[in-house]
Amino acid sequence: EMINEDANARQSLRRLFNMEGLLQSTVVKGKEEAGAKYRDYFELKETVNRMPSHRVLAAFRGETEEYLQLSIRPPDEKALSILSRNFVKGQSPASNQVITAMEDSYKRLLAPSIETDVRQAAKIRADTEAIRVFGQNLHELLMSPPLGSKNVLAIDPGFRTGCKVVCLDSQGKLLHNTTIYPTLSARQADEAGKVLREMVQQFKVEAIAIGNGTAGRETEAFIRGLNLPGSVAVVMVNESGASIYSASEAAREEFPYYDITVRGAISIGRRLMDPLAELVKIDPKSIGVGQYQHDVDQNKLKQNLDDVVMSCVNKVGVEVNTASKQILTYVSGIGPALGENIIEYRNQNGSFKSRKELKKVPRLGPKAFEQAAGFLRIRDSENPLDSSAIHPENYALVSRMAGDLNCSVRELMQNEALRQKITLEKYVNETTGLPTLSDIVEELKKPGRDPREQFEVFNFTAGINSIDQLITGMKLPGIVTNVTNFGAFVDIGVHQDGLVHISKLADHFVKRPGDVVKIQQKVEVTVLEIDRQRKRIILSMQKDAQIKESEG
Image (cartoon, rainbow, N blue to C red; front, side, top):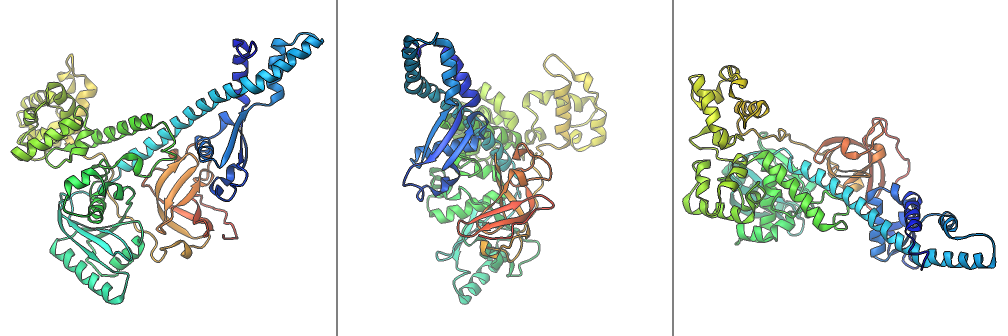
C-alpha cells in the first residue's frame, strides 16, 4: 500500500508507461472466425503513444465486442527497476520482503491503475484526431459544388422494387413522381424509356440525378442509352444518409403524403442542386465521411460537427425566402426556435421584401439580427445590398461611397470603373478599418457570390459496373468518398469503394492523407489488388503503381 501510494513512484511509472507502454492485443480463444474483421489485431504489439488513432479505436472496439484482449504495459524489468531504486535498500532478508511487496504492488495495484490512465489518455488522443478528420471531411462534402437552380429528374434506383422517379423544379419543389422497372424485362425497359423521355420533355429537365446505391450503375447505363438531348446532364449522386433523411421527422413534415422511397429520391435530386442545403437535414454522423464516429466522445463530436456545419452555412449564405428550417438553424444567432419563427412568418406574410423586415419576426431581437443579418440573403429586395454579404450596419457607408461618386448603390455594384475610384482611406473610422473596407469593395464586385467551386459533370468508366469486371492494372476515374488517417476511399462505380493506402496516395511521402486528397475530389486510380471474396479493392494514385500478379 505504501509503494502504491507513493507520488514519486507513480509519476516515474506513468512517464515510463507513456513513453514505452506497449499495447498488446490478442484474440479471445475460440472467437477467431467470428472476429475475423479484427485479424490484424490478433497478435499486435505497438507502442501506444505512436499508434495511429484509427488503430487505437479499432483495438478498443474489438475489446468492447469481446473479440480481443488488450493490455498496455512497459517492459516489466524497467518498471520494477524504477521501484527498486526507490524502495529496496541492501541485500538482507528484510530487503527480500520489500522486493516481494514491490512486485505485488506493481502487478496488482500500480500497473492496472496506471494502465487505466494511459488508456484514457490514448482514447482522448484518438478521439480528438478522429473528430478532426471527420470535421475536415464534412466541411469538404458540404462545400461540394452545387448544380444550382435547374429542373432535375431524380432516380432512387432498385432492381425488384423498381426505380423511384421524381421531377423537381428549379427551387427543388416536387412536381411529379412515379416508379419505373428498367432492369426486369425488355418490355418494361421499353415502357420505362418512354415514360422518362416524356417526363424530360414535359418538365423541361436539365439534369438527371441517379443514386449510387443498388442498381445505380445499371440505371445510369439505361439512361445513357435513351439518346436524351445532349444538354441533359446525367450525374451519379452519393446517396449516403438519404434513407436516414427519408424516415426523419423533417421529411415527414415536408412530405407527409409520400412514402420514404419518394422522399429518398427527392433528397437525391436536391443533393445535386445544393448539397449543403440538403445535407444539413441529416445527422452528420449518418453521412458516412468519418472513421469510428460511433466510438468517439459523442458530445465533443456533436459540438465539432455543429461548428463545421455552421461555418459552411455562414460562408455560403442563406436565401431567406427559400431556406428550410434546418439550414436556418445553423445561421449564427438564429437557432431552432427562431428558424421556425422565420418560416412561420414567411408562410403567413409571404416572401421577405428586405432584411429590415426580419426584425418583425417574433423574438428576433436586435442582437440576433446583428449576428444573423450578414448571412441571410434576399435576392429580389429593393435594396441590392440585401442580396450580398455586406452587413446592414455598413449600408450607410456604401451609400456614402456611392454619393461621393454621384451614382446609386446599384450603379456602384455594376460598374467596375466607379469602384476603382473609391479611396478606402477616406472611409476609415473608429469601428471600420481598411481590411473591412477592402472586404466590402470585394463583395460589391460579386454580391452574394457563392464561394463553392463550379459544378462539373463526372462520368465513371462505361461498362465497368461491378467488382467482377475489374482487372488489376486498370486505370479508372473515381471520386474520393472518405478520407481517413490511413488513406482515402474512392468510388470507381462498382458499388464498392476502393482503398488508396496512405503509402499509395502520391509519389512522395504523405504525412496526412487530407493534405493530398479531399472529399468529392476527382482522381485517377490504378487497380492494384482485388479480393472478390471479401469485396475489397486496393487502389493506387501513384504514377508508376506496382501491380500484384495474383487476385483474390
